[in-house]
Image (cartoon, one colour):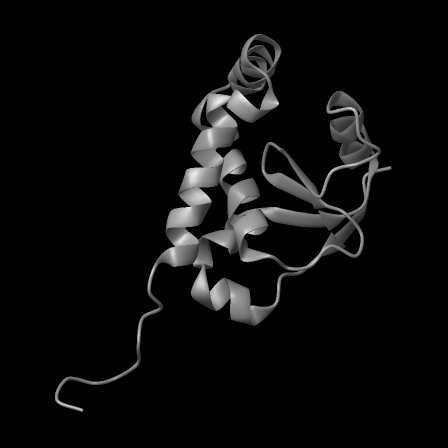
Length: 123
């Protein structure tokens, strides 16, 4: 019902340390409920407060992980965020929900960010 705990690969948390600040789970009822709300069987990911639920078997896709992490930040920013998110979805639709647009843009900026090099000055 609530999925099983999962741990991100070190390669992801070393590149995007912010991903280590949320809990990750595989499977669970929240994925089904999210899917039902969108007229689908399930979704690839859904965030509830500081826990991200990922579909079993879904790849460790940085864009998806960062997108869901952004939702965790949105939850942390306001106690009424869940109501605001639902209101946006009801009045504007999922694809035009400003919180989805924000999470998509935020994740895209981080995926495109150049990876730091470990070169010392003068090397």
